[in-house]
Length: 133
Image 1 (cartoon, rainbow, N blue to C red):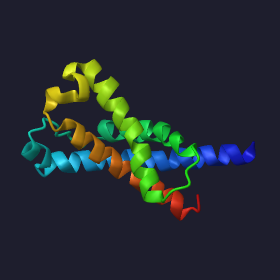
Image 2 (image 1 turned 45 degrees about the horizontal axis):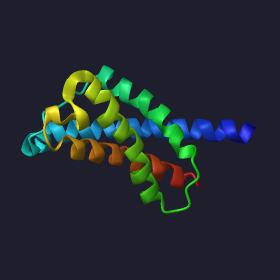
Image 3 (image 1 turned 180 degrees about the vertical axis):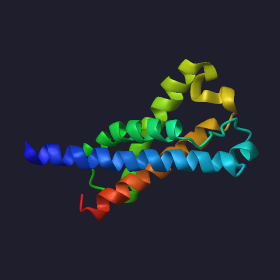
Image 4 (image 1 turned 30 degrees about the vertical axis):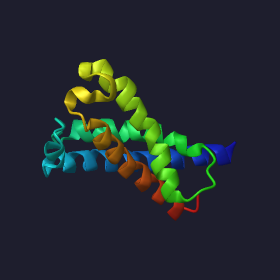
């Protein structure tokens, strides 16, 4: 039981790092004009509220790193990041009125979301690898 709680804590912390990497990656893509260049209307403002929400939800999503994975840490980070990306694109953003895949923000929105989530997933997986997990 103690080992499970330890793994739970480590995965939550790695997920929090993933949330921070996702938030900063998405902010940077908007701030430096990458999203505008793709025709996507996403350019978040960097604030405490923006960061806090993504760090906490990242920690919760980090619990998916409890799933067993035998492949490389890079592949683990990318493929497990597709789960929160799918939730964003197929559930959360359409509920806000942006349509399936959030294409109401631009046709390339799925690419931007997958890239931002991949940044977070790979950062979290790298942290877990550095800890020997």
